[in-house]
Amino acid sequence: MSTFLELGLKEPINKALTDLGYEKPTVIQEKAIPQIISSTEDLKAFAQTGTGKTAAFSLPILELLDSSQSNVQAIILSPTRELAVQIGNNIKDFCKYLPDVKVATVYGGSSMEDQIRALKRGAQIVVGTPGRTVDLIKRRALKLGNVQWLVLDEADEMLNMGFKDELDKVLEATPESKQTLLFSATFPREVEAIARNYMTKPVEITSGEKNSGSENVTHEYYGVTERTRYPALKRIADLNPDIYAIIFCRTRRETQEVADNLIRDGYSADSLHGDLSQGQRDSVMGKFRKRTIKILVATDVAARGLDVNELTHVLNHKLPDQIENYTHRSGRTGRAGNKGISIVLVNGKEKGKLRQIERIIKSKFIEGKVPSGKEIIKNQLMNLIDKVQNTEVNESEMEEFLPSIYEKLEDLDREALIKKFVSLEFNTMLKYYENSKDLNNLSSRDNSRARTVNENMTRFFINIGRKDSLNPGKLIGLINDQNIGDKVEIGSIDILDTFSFFELDKNFEDKTLEAFASNQPDFSGRSVNIEITKKERSGGGRRGGRKPFGKKDGGFGRRRGSEGGSSRARSDRRSSDRPDRASRNSGSGSGERRSSAGFGRKRRES
Image 1 (cartoon, rainbow, N blue to C red):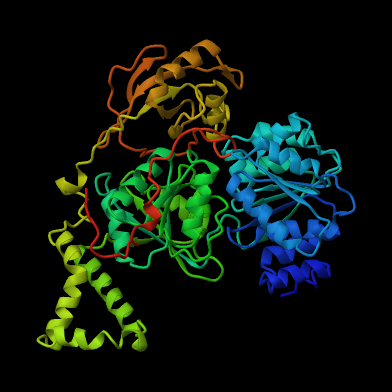
Image 2: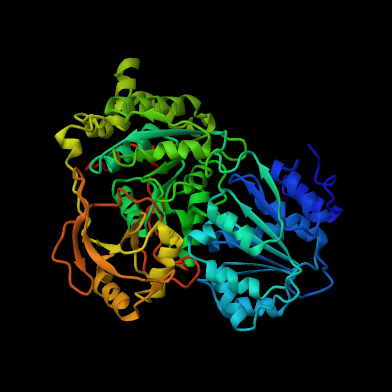
C-alpha cells in the first residue's frame, strides 16, 4: 500500500494527515486520489460506508485548487446537514497547514445570513445540502460559474430523498467544463441514471464489491410479531450489557415512539430525526459520542454522516423500505477494523426481504433466538462479576473506612457476603424476568395477538405504478408538489405494476384529497387519481374497500406500523434541509439516565 505522499499530495496536506493520525490510505483513497489528480475525466466511485470517501475526493481537490483565488472552485453536495457538517469539518482539518484555503458549509436549519457572510468573505470549497445550495444560488449569494469540481456524495440517498430538481438547478449553475465526481455506497439503478444524465464517459472505481456489506459485520435476524417487536428489542439490549448502538426506524413518528418507550423503561437512549432543531441534534449527537447516551434511535436520513467508529450493534427495528439502504445501516458498525453486529427484527411478511438483502450484501443472515430471561440474567451477572474483578482498589483513600466496614460485616461469611452483594444489584432484574414468556413461540396467542391498526395513518391508492416509471423518490416528490403541508408524515409505500399505495398522516387526510382533486396532477402523461383504501389486516390477504377521493374515510381499520412496504418513504424531501418547526418530545434529561446495562431500573415489558 502506498503512502499519502506517494499518491501525489503535497507536504502541508501530508503534515495535517499525520496530525490526524492518518497513516496509510484506504483502498478507495489509493484508487481515487491519483485518478482525480492526474485526470479531468468524470469519476464514479463506489465504496462501503466508513472507508474514507470524504478524504478520497477532498484531498485531491485540496492538492489542485488555486488558493490565490477566492472564488468557489469546488461544490460538494450531500443529502443531509449532518453529513455536510461532517464533510466540511473534515476538509478544514485536512487544510490545517493551507491557511489561504477557505471552506464554507451551507445547510438548512442554520442562519442563512451567517452563511451568506461566509460566502462573501470568500470560500474556494463549498459543502452544502441541495435545498440550501439552490436557495443561495437563487439569492445570487452563491456563484458557481468558476467551479472546477462538482462532488455528489451519497448520490443514491439524494435521489431517494427527491432532490433531482435541486441537482438539476445546481448543475445549470456550473460550467460544462467541470469535473463531476460521484461517490456512493450503493449502486441502484438511480445512480446509473445520474451517471448517464450528469456525467460524460465517467471512469469507474470500486472498493470491494458494489453494494456489498462490510466483512467485519455479522448479520443476524430475529423473528417477531408486532406484539413482541419492542419486548424483543429490549431483551437484545439487556443481553448485551455493554451495548453501544443505533436503532433504525422508518419514520420520525416510529423513531420518537421507540425512543420514548426506551427512556420510560430506564434505558440510556435518545432520538435523532427531522423534527429536531439543529441545536437539539447537536446536543443528542454530543451525548452519544461521549457515550452519555448508549442507544440512539434514528431515521435513515438523520443517521447519514454519523462519524462513530465503535458501535457494537446496529438494530433494525424494521427493515428499510428500500432494501439497498440496509447496506448504509449495517455499515454504521464494524468500522475502523472493529467487529460489529447488525440485527434485524422481522415478522412473517418481512422475512422474505432477507433473501434480497443477502444477494446485495453478499452475506448470509444468521437466525437468532430472542433471549430468555434466564439467559439475560446470566449475561448481566457475569458482566457484573467481570467488572468487580477488574475494578482497581484505591487502598490509600479507602484505608480509613475499612475498619468500620469490616466491623459491620464481621458476622457474614464469604458465601453470605457474595449472595447479599449480588442480590443488592440483581433483585430488580430477577423479579422483572422471573416469569418472562418465550418470545420465540410466534404462534402463541400471547405473542401473535398484535394490535393491527395504526390510527395515525391513512392509506391511499394511486393509479400509477412501476410501468409508469414510478419509484419511491418520484412518488414522494409528487406528493410534495401538491403542497399538502411542510411536515406531513409519510408511512410505507407499495409500488406495484399499474398502481401503488402510500400512507399519510391522518391529520392531512382531507388536505391530501382536496390537493390532488384541485391540482389534477399528471405523471408521465397520465392523469393522477388517489383514493382512500382499506388497509390489509394481518392474517388476511385482501386489499379492498377503496373510497373515491374527495370523500371522508368511513373508519376503515389501519394496521399498526408498516408491514408490507417495499419502498422507503420520507415525509419531506427537504426535511433535513430546512428550518425545523416541530418540537421535540423525548425530554431533555435522557442522557443522564443509566446505561442499558444498569441494574435496579424501572422495567416494563409490553
